[in-house]
Length: 163
Image (cartoon, rainbow, N blue to C red; front, side, top):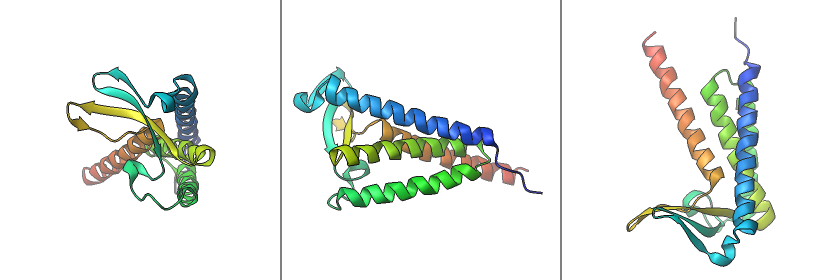
């Protein structure tokens, strides 16, 4: 007897996706129109955090630049469709939440590519001479989603070995 996917976890994944998308798009609208970061270029928030305007025409950390926005839009759309299939079949809480985070983040960045031709990045963490890449809420949700999915796979593996 196979267990059916729990509708509750699917709903949780959809809610996470919608929340990520909402927070991502609101933060980007505020950065662009409210704060007018494109004109200011960079604003110090804390000694270790600036809002720094970057139009990212590539993928995470500027990788694979030069391929054109439509390649990234199509790949992201296909990934979202695949993740929606995984979410529809998900039986585990962490996988559902992870899918939601990745889906919401991917859609947020696709919206940017469609509207602006590039992704709006603005979170810039740094300490002294060390500086992290500039990113956004969508990127954070994608990375956290991947991390949760990895955690879930480790937990499942551990449970299978310990009975």
